[in-house]
Every structure is written in structure tokens, then in C-alpha cells.
Length: 185
Image 1: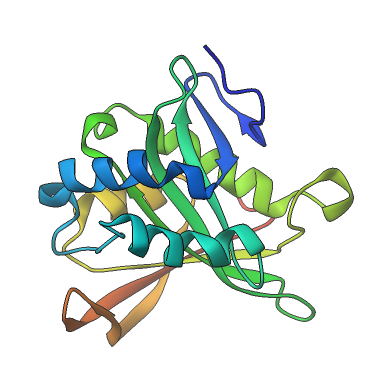
Image 2: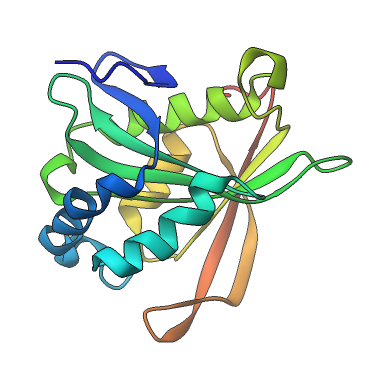
């Protein structure tokens, strides 16, 4: 079964927008994936937290969110958000993402990240975001996330000490970026 409203599709996954109705499945996946996410991120774990998290992604003011779904079943495999979108001289956004445990290690996120990059760089008149640059800020110990962006063609640009407050503490992050026209973009 294939979800009919995918924004972009690959061989194994499709990207679709967040919906408030996805809260129960999303939060159930979060609970199943706590061991995978900790200490890297803390996605919403209750329906109320999910609604507060998803609403700005649905409304799209300066950010957009994509649910990564398995094409055969429509099951939510994870999420990728583009936050802090700035147009004009920057045309840039910052990635945030997380896979769910049942989908981890299956190559689904490598495919999904390629779809997100294509959506981000596609011109607005083609349904894309028309961005020129995407950034990802990753905690140095998160080997899986570093391998994901490296494999997608992102380049390391620097190190930011105490950059983001995650799971109750300020965390160091490596700054990675990809621009339109780079290999992998």
C-alpha cells in the first residue's frame, strides 16, 4: 500500500507532511525508540507534546516538517524537519531529524535525506523550497548521524561548543552543510 499524498518518493520511502492525526503513531514510535534517541534528541512523547511540536511544522512559518514513511505500509519510519528557514540573501535552513528503532539500520534514512535535499533545493514553482543551503548540527559522538550526512554529500564546516540545549544539557555540535550544486545535492 502506498500513501497517495507523498511529496517525494524513493524506492523504499516517501515524504509527506505532518498531520495532527499522526500523534498516536508518532508518539508510540518515540516510546519504542528511546534507547536510539538518548542522549541525542528528545522528540515529543505524548499526544499533547506532539501537537505542540507538529503545529508549527504544519503551519510552515519558517520551518517545514516531513514524515518519512515506508512506501509499502505507510508506517512512519522517522522525521526530517527543516528549521530556521531564512530566505533572501541566505536561502538556508537547518536540519533536524530522527529515525525510529524499527527503521534504523535499513538504509531508509539515507534515501529519505536525499529526497529532503531534493525537495529543499527544488525551485518553489516546482513545489520545492527553493533553498540554496542546508545545515546540520550534530553532536560529535553521534556516529550514525555523522555517517548519514557525510554519505549525503554534506561537508564539515566547523565546531560549535555548547551550541544546543538537548536532554537537559548544553551540547557541543559539529556543523555540516550542503549547498545546491554540490555532489549529493
